[in-house]
Amino acid sequence: MAGVDMSSEDFEALVRDALDALPDWTAPLLDEIAVLVRDTPLPGTAPPGTSLLGLFRGIPLTAYGGRVPGSMPDTITLYRFPILAVCASRDEVPSRVLKVLGHEVGHAMGIGEAELRALGWY
Image (tube, rainbow, N blue to C red; front, side, top):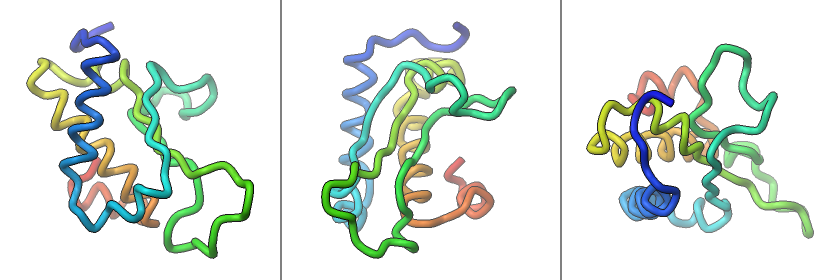
């Protein structure tokens, strides 16, 4: 693996720090979303030839009509190994984690890929 080596414990601490760094107005949205960390995406999750750093699964806020009782929560998953692979040093990891988390929060809000990239959340 190219990039940075970091334990899952250290990486998860950076995810907690990133959650704390998000604007306060995201808190109500994040109260409804489970934030997970996996080492790698499940096979078939990402299109061939792409590197998936994070994934939002659920119903975006713009289409939200209320949670169906008993349904699974929306999730944001951050993928540790792919994120570490795009970082040249440990110093880059916190900002990359925040950027990926912010990108996926944007998807949860209903913001599309092109707009997130235009806003710098890629």
